[in-house]
Structure formats: C-alpha cells, structure tokens
Length: 133
Image (tube, rainbow, N blue to C red; front, side, top):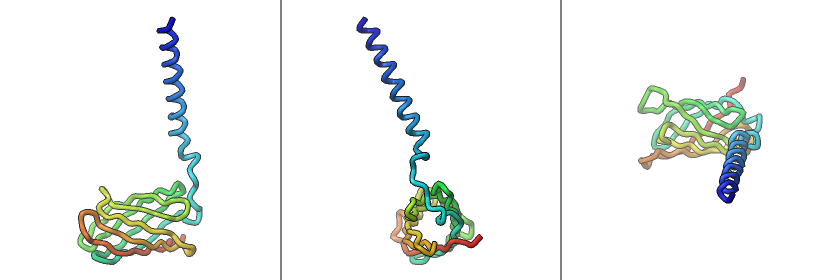
C-alpha cells in the first residue's frame, strides 16, 4: 500500500511539475512587458572610437534586434542580434559577442550608447536614428 501511495504521489508531483513549468515556458512571452510601439522599426547608425563603421538594425514588436554591421577593416557585413527592453534600453552584438553595443533610445527616437570589442581594448561610442517609413 505504501508503494502505491509513493508511486501515485510521484506521478501527481511529476504532472504538476510538467504543467507548471510547461505553462510558464509557453506563456512567458504573454506576460512580458511589451516594447513601446514607437521603438519598433529600422535604425541606421554609425560607431566611432578605436574603430569605426556603420550598422543597420531592426527592432521587432517583441524587442528582438536583428541587423548587420560593416566594419572598416572588413568590407563584408556581419550579422547583429540582440534585444531592446520596454523602456528603450538596447543591447546588440556580433556573433560570439565579439563587438557589444549598449545604448538607450531617447524621446526623439535616437539611440546613443557605447560599444566595446571583446578580447581587445577597442571601444567607442555610437549613434543611430530611426529610419522614416
């Protein structure tokens, strides 16, 4: 009898665990604070400092950032990805986060911030403006 109760308890506990974490995982996006609609769109920017170049990013309604960067030393563009919070604080980076950009979108939909290169002392500032549709 004790074995049956232990098995039943284990099954019920496992079921609750699966349901709780499954619902939490699936609905995590449902409960996330949405990004301001005015932040959504394409931004064109430039960065200067120990290196320089240009980039284009797109911020989606979920706050994900996708784009590309052109580095002075490399004429080919490199993909960028990242995220932007509901209050306009954004972070985006190249693969393996070799170049990391951190900034904030201000009231005029201009993003300003700093960048730094991993495994190097290279750093600087950047600015991006929202492209008009």
